[in-house]
Image (cartoon, rainbow, N blue to C red; front, side, top):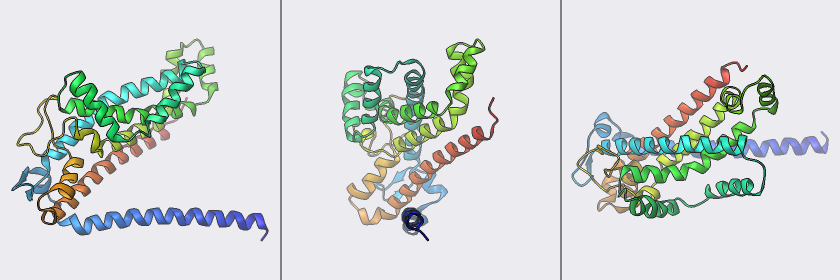
Length: 284
């Protein structure tokens, strides 16, 4: 065995070891959650309101609130993010301003979520007078998701060969017809994956909604976008760190964590299914 082959095999061995370590830690975390919170999972736990100071009952309003605010996030972030990426990729010329915009978008992806929360308070709660509501929280999470959606969509559009565009334009199609019928279909798997990953992160965030609309406890479900709401991430934060009987509610906290993990997993499974569905369709 020569030296280059030995180094290559050593490198692959290190990569396999790192992969196995990550998989092991993930499975260990999931198993630990099930051991400590699996007994809390039941239909009653998912379909009833918290009771007795959150020491009993379920998490139904938190599930509904999380789904509601994630829906508002998607309705705002997906159209704006995809449209912005299409413009940057297909229409904007390569000059200093466009490069500055791209750099700014990528930098925004690294901004701490607490900053988005404070910005949401200044813009949506106070500036636009939306108050502490589902709308304010959803729009704030939408801003948080935009850098991921824009970046993923732009990268997906770049994977489409330029020859596709040139062929469609040569046949007399307009630029928008080319984008809609030729460029977007092959890029949809990547776009969908980026959208779902952005929404998955938004669904699990606590800091942005902490200031913009989430409540410690409510006796009602949010009926409109102007109402406050309960959410799984904040509910988990309260049970794990702020509750007056932390040890008593520990199983409920683990059950809440499992529920949140399940919701995020469902979003990712949907993304994978959509990705495989579009990849399996013939192009052209």
